[in-house]
Each structure stands twice: as structure tokens, then as C-alpha cells.
Image (cartoon, rainbow, N blue to C red; front, side, top):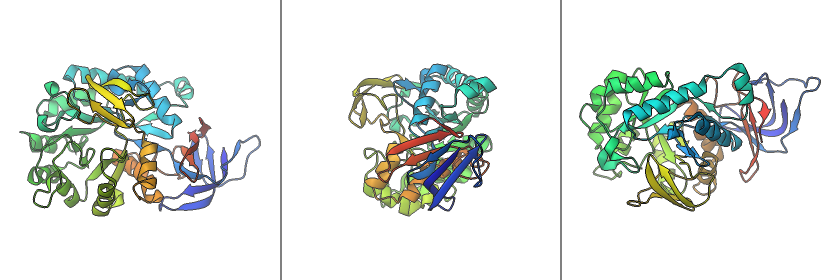
Length: 384
């Protein structure tokens, strides 16, 4: 496939008018068209790499924690159709045996025969799992079920990783809880340790980062506020240059002024756009569930029926990127990197995903001047 007449997103985070060539599912350098090769007119669109969502729960009525191949398949199909061509769904705080089952199903889903891979050309690649619990704080549980929160335990984590056949990319912890820093030391070489749903002060967060934690789950949400006398987790993230931070730019979870300030404070290279979407994404208003808890969805707000706490989002990653640019003042070139290259680097898959570079998966998203979706190519095959 050759895609002509597009503004191609470059590794240096600029756009350059040109064309894209994809053969045998991967990007190649510019080449003459071969006999019978599909040639697509991009009509002047922006051509960006396939997006990567490394923290979301579900969409279209399905949740990753449903624990079925059908749920993962339908989630992956919808995500690919909107331009998210690689995914690392998030688990909720559930009983340990249930989490093991969910992870084992994910591992089985990923093991496809060549025929199954060919048939699944329109599904986003499952590249990891982001475990948001169960080693979190009851004080900042958010939409997590506190009955299933347990202390950090390296052996339990390894049970998760064995069930997932190595698919767990992130494990979330509350660093103020007993044994958390020891846990980080024990597993830091086996998984990315993130700070998630935590009531930590600055000192405990810094201790975790100094021990080897390197990631922050949905910055500002489910953690103490950042203030001039109590910098908390946000201040510790700012002071820890190796730490990358997720941000939900749906216009609900974080104020636009705070989004802009955070980009200035951390620098764009450390920012990762996520959707944190739950099963209601792509669905009408109504009542749904998240982690076994009832959630009411109205417009772009998802809240627990029990106490009104925010319960994830119903906004997809492409829409979050569009909101970041159109409503929050983040440059398009920066927002694209935060939805493609940065999550790929955080997941350790940048050699295969995250840029339009020869040898990488031929995943391309075409956007018009208003950032509306005009086309999606997955491994060189047009799926939209």
C-alpha cells in the first residue's frame, strides 16, 4: 500500500508533506508502486502513527475484566476502528483468583495461530496489561472496591505475571502503605511500578521513585492535591525525571489550565495521554458497571451511583487527543507524541510501534484539519 498526498508525522515531532509505503505489514522507505499495489489518496490529511492507549477499561458495553476472549476481541476491534491500534487495558481491584483468571484469558487471547492473526487484522494489538489494583489505598480508592484492596506482595504479583504469561506491563501501588518500598525493590526489574490510587505525601512518593518506581497513574486523580506546602505525589513526579505520567484530557478529570501547567512542569516527553474509558465508551447514556460497582453515565461524565465519585471516562483516546489540542491549547505535534511515541516507550515497544519508521508495524491514522478521523490502516490493511 502507498498512501500519497499526506502530511506525514516525523520522529522529530514535525509534519512533512509526502507519502507512506507499507509492504508485508511494515513501513518501508519511499518506493515506486508495484503492479497491482493499492494506492490511496490521503487528500492532504495528517498521517500519524496508530495510537496506543495504555490505560483504559473497556468500551462498547465490554470491559477487559469481563474475563472473556469475546470482550477483549470486541474491545480491540472498536479501538482499532477509531485509530487506537495497540492497547494495554487496565484491571480493577478484584479478588486475586478473579484477576488471575482475567490475566490468563488475556494471555490465551494473545496466542493466535497465523490464520487467526490474519482474521484479526481489524483488531488492535494487545501489547500489555496495566494493573491499577489491588495494592492501592482505601483512602483514595475512587471507583475501586475497597473490599478487594490488599497489601503489596511480590509473590502475589508474580502469580499475576505467571497467569498473564508476562503480559503485565504496570503494577500500581500506594507507596505510603506498609511494605510498599520493599515491594518496589523486589519487582522493579520485572515490571514497571506505578503510583496509583494513593494518599501518599511527597516523602513516601519520592522513596518509591528512588527505589525504582517509574510511572504515575492518571496524574491528579485519586491522589492528594498539589499545593505550595504539600507537593504530594505530583511534586514527587515533577522532581523524578525518570517518571512518566498519565493524564486524562477528557475535559472532566483535569482542568485545561492544569493540563497546560503540567506539560510545562514535566515536559512533553514525560506525558502520556490516556482515556481511562470504561464500558460505556461508544454507548448511550445509562447505568453500567465498573469493577463490580454501579456507574451512572450522562454525557461525558461517568460517576458511581453510590457516592458520585468519578468512575473512569467515556471519552476515547482520539477524542482526548483532539480535546487536548482544540480545547486545551496543546500543540498537535506534542499531543500526537503523547498518544503514540510516549506510550510506546513507556511500554518498551518503541522498536515496533509509535512512529512511522521503516520496519515498524504499518499502523497509520488519517485525520483532517479538524482532527476528524478519515482513515485507519492496521499493518498495511485499510480497516476504515
